[in-house]
Length: 75
Image (cartoon, rainbow, N blue to C red):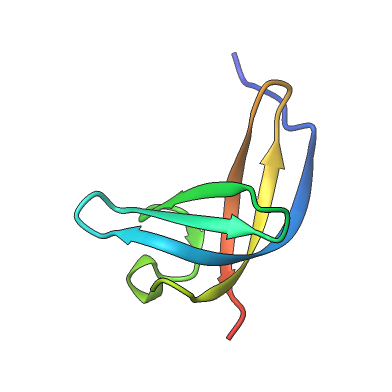
């Protein structure tokens, strides 16, 4: 059974922490929400993420959750 996406939002965010051995990075958006991206996510190369790096994230919304669909560098 496929879960149907109910929409998308785009936010500017800043990388707050990168855990390279886990392939995980945390981003904080302009509304102070924390999002996680993984090495497999589409967009900016995971290895280029550093704390303080500005990014634009596209968030996919589903009925019971939301997740980062794409992460692109701003600078």
